[in-house]
Image 1: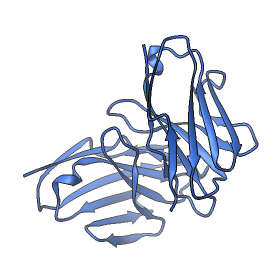
Image 2: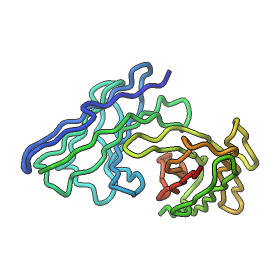
Image 3: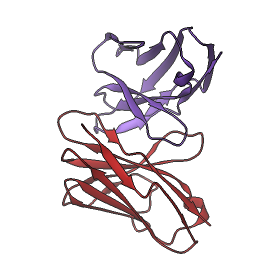
Length: 115
Length: 109
């Protein structure tokens, strides 16, 4: 149980284009989903927290107009990187919390490369 | 703010024991997680401590001292597959996870 999927697992896009990443909780309903970014040999940095049906809460320094988050249902959250630039190249990981405790279940991650 | 410190790298021999320390200073505390992460993959859950003391789970054990802001992860009978990054993460008063930079453990034959 407690499986979280992400799609795509990797994506290459050209500078200036937009990319959408999906995060789904497959066997539970997630009251809260989180989006992290991880650069090589660094730890996970929280980008934003999203609750179903409400606006996401972004961490300081994260541009909300660049990283659009939509938590459309209790099992789906999407992250859209708009007008991507090479410096946005990173490993993006989502996690989901069912609301029963503090544990977050992580998706397998999406490797984004912007050329 | 949150400050979580753990060593950058550790190396040990197969079959040995390794202890990874984590110290933290956070605004509020609702527990501490340890995760294992292999390169290019998502973190996987190892342990959760919210009360002081030692939690043992097979070859892995985790300890917490809230008064000292200190935790450790103990890996016993090391296997080659244990080579990975180990992340200490604290649930703060805002219920968000704050991660340490991770400790890369290399197991040698």
